[in-house]
Image: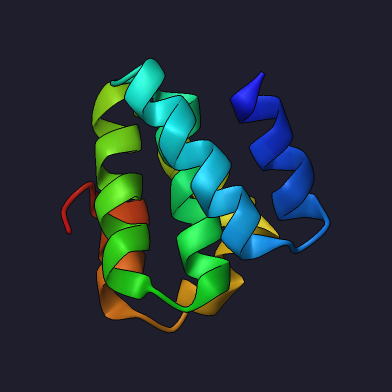
Length: 94
């Protein structure tokens, strides 16, 4: 439920609320790749590249398919010029 709320908030670009909802969801259900990927997207949109890359690295570690999803997801647009993001989605290393 918190995950769904966080996604709705992300889609509405209520980033602070989305970050709070998703962080709470992550605490309730740690190591869920979809929550970590959503946290990465929120952090990317929020301009926090370091946190976004940390969450995305964890999400990819839990489910490698997140690499290609992140490469295509427009929520990660703010990271596209970051060499760490490019390396992560291409080679699997941050």
